Image 1 (spheres, rainbow, N blue to C red):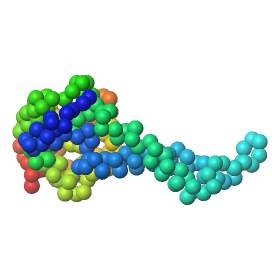
Image 2 (image 1 turned 180 degrees about the vertical axis):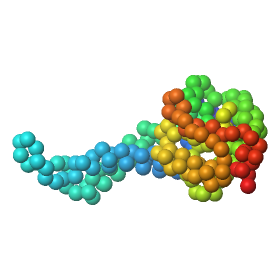
Image 3 (image 1 turned 90 degrees about the vertical axis):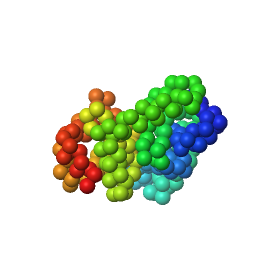
Image 4 (image 1 turned 60 degrees about the vertical axis):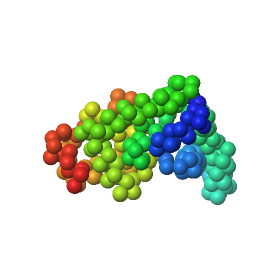
Length: 218
């Protein structure tokens, strides 16, 4: 998937920002990917910090001399491998931020060889219609409440049943879900939960009663 610089500039003139990452800046995105690579290497190898352990053949030592050596190895791994998931020229997900950052389009598995301005504008228009509905306004209110409470990495969007919280490949998924649940309980909002069939999304099925929805605006 490619997008021309001229297309990006034209969309920016219409206050539409195109990204292949969810964070506010590319530097934040790179840091998150680096940290994920570091955590993977650290957790995978932490059992190998040097120490004695008993085996069927007797006592033996394992790989790393110290925790410091393990940490250095993990940093080196992250320095080398973070780019596997942070290459701007090799991506299939688009994040389209518009209307002064209030709304976000997340387009998965984009197969178009080149992204045109017309393609993006159609996605934005469809997105605006979604957010003008009852659950769209509710999703915006929940996004605002989560932001005020310092919740990071949380992708909340309107659905036909309420809101969805994206959990696939989201290292903050458990924190996101708990915080949204806490907010809903505190406000007395009626809802129940379930995962999507593929377990990529955690669904909040919200009662559409006017007094229930408006609790998010108080």
